[in-house]
Image 1 (cartoon, rainbow, N blue to C red):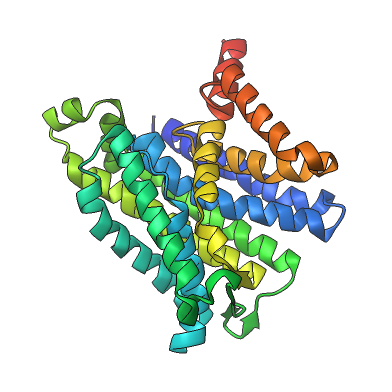
Image 2: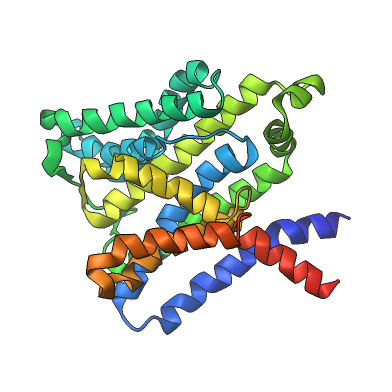
Length: 315
């Protein structure tokens, strides 16, 4: 029984690690490694949203705001406070978690559409602050981000950032898989099915919803910090509404409640626009059409549908 549980928990992680090791061997240029690094970073942000939406059943349309908090934290820490970029990365993730705790207490009392609109408003407020506080954030033009330095090693170059992003995603996926298998994960799944039923069996509904919200914010902020440090520049667009929608789409397309689904969804929405650049005039229309087709044909998401199909063939 224990062996089965461990296999179910760590087989996806091992498969992801193997994929990460193979990609640099077959990538024809540094451009493809950069795209892959972007996939890993956005998958990390989507992982947090998977815990919030896929397990706790709470919708957030302002999740990119936390990504922006992490990104600007890495930029503001060294520029205005004299902190090291690495320390700023962790402090900004912690600050995002604290803000999520403070904001989440009132808004998570809402449900359904009301919760979605409340989180949307929160994300819009953050984007407005990033855009208007020119003295701190650089305003619409954004600001430069200092390079991360770890034990004297200055992280630069596409290949190095590929491995940093891959390592961060592996750690994030490992934490998420362990969380899902823990009593907290089981409580979140019960909460997703029915808040009333979960409360009846002793689950502290408010506390678990808030915990999922905070965890999702920390994941997004850490991913935002990595994104800003890799690009060397951050603008308010990172916290924009469209990025929030893209993160939600990653979770839904990959598969709600699937850790690997977050990675697949991120790959879908990061790689596909690159493949559609040949259709410049119709790129956005084709992307929207493909998303619609996927949702019609695979309403459960790519990973859960593929798993179900494979089990049916093997049984």
